[in-house]
Image (tube, rainbow, N blue to C red; front, side, top):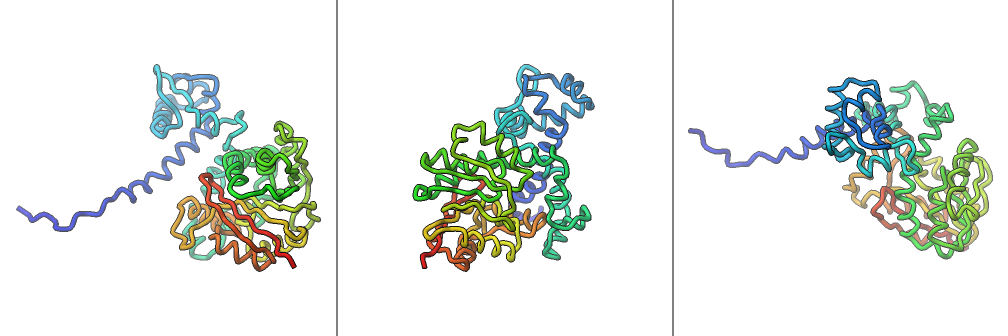
Length: 345
């Protein structure tokens, strides 16, 4: 007989959970790419009918579908597979809330970049050159067709619909009269702000190629008469006048020189008492979390020139450029809010 080990083995749950994490992501990516969720929008179907409709192997399809049930993406009822409400809302191409563009980008593009995370950490640079042979700016290489760009922007729109209402409620924007959302994509933040503050006027300012989709999306809202869309480059073109500029998921993309350039332009364009609203996910002061922000920080390392920051780091950047009264609010959404005011002279 052997003596029992006086020291219990550590719980392996955290390791096993992470071992399976990429497999779960790939199940969702594969089902999305194969068209499972779009096929089931009109109602439940058997595995055989799904396989026939998608032109895939029947038994393999059943195994994937069962995995989707286990992940909560599909439900199994009366020998048929059905979309869950979340799958219909976020994983189908016809949904205005869809995240499909960003998810396909994650599968088709970011998956390869993340495969070289060790090299990104070793060298401290993104992996676009290593994986695709491209230099920055990255998006100009990938979005070479209007269809790909539109679908990606709609994926970001889905993120915005989830996050922007939380951001505009997190801080008090009532003192401001005109918000200009720099790099505002489909206008989701401008729309959310106008819904929350009935007196507010807003402008979406983004690259000319994004204007038509922004106009289309804004036109479907009840605040369309208070939101206009203008094309331009916020690094080089004159910024539309405003007393509040918004930067939603912008600063984390760029290196320090570009951030300083942009904040300098924003400060110069604001009247005294004007403000800047930043929507990013904040790291805790000691950078021990939250996990979403940490993962996004590594995503920035592998995919861009930028990174995520703590509130103190944002405050230091903003104060360098003449901003004061920096406040940050953590929300329950994928993005938090930072608001700062232009210092009076």
